[in-house]
Image (cartoon, rainbow, N blue to C red):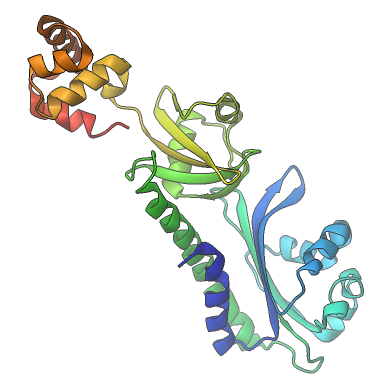
Length: 302
């Protein structure tokens, strides 16, 4: 399923258990004391409502209460909602009289999802059972959306320069994460131990700005593509084969694929003896003794 279609499909299932007249699903990051919104999905609410929220978010007391109760459902009845600053500029104009929402942060990545259900009937408050059901289902919705998003990226990588067996993440051009596999975070922290997530490590972001498509760290190798105003990154542990030069890697691959010394020599316009010298150096660097070991090590690198 396309990532843009997932929230609508998921929330249509929720409506069967917890009826609502409108809903919102937003995601983003909390950076330097400010909410940075990546995506927002609205159902039965005008798209202009997001622009209104941007103008009033500094005083949006409803969002502040969701933030203060992160991970818990906050239920605003009609009377509660009317007492909030955001009611008149944000909720009343679009017919929202009941609100049940939750702000769910991911402590590993620094990202968040916020989901709210709305009702237009002032007398139809969300009940305690509905709150409990909502609290139980939202973490599963958020994880399912993340998996759907990353699975779509994996399918795309099957036709791209990024290999399939790496751990991936997506960030915008400012380095703010949009999604990441858990193992991407764990491996990145091996290379940058003080990194706390939400925005890519400054050293890596600097490399992205320099262009290219990969960088070798002390413990990891990161590759990336820039597409549709986002960076699509992959990371893997560094291996002994990463010590090979580009020419050595090319010769090693040709040899592992079954090319003879003479064939490789023709390919690279060098002598067969030079090919043998390169292979001897490659075996010594990798501390191996046969083609099977070479093939296995080459399979671990880009």
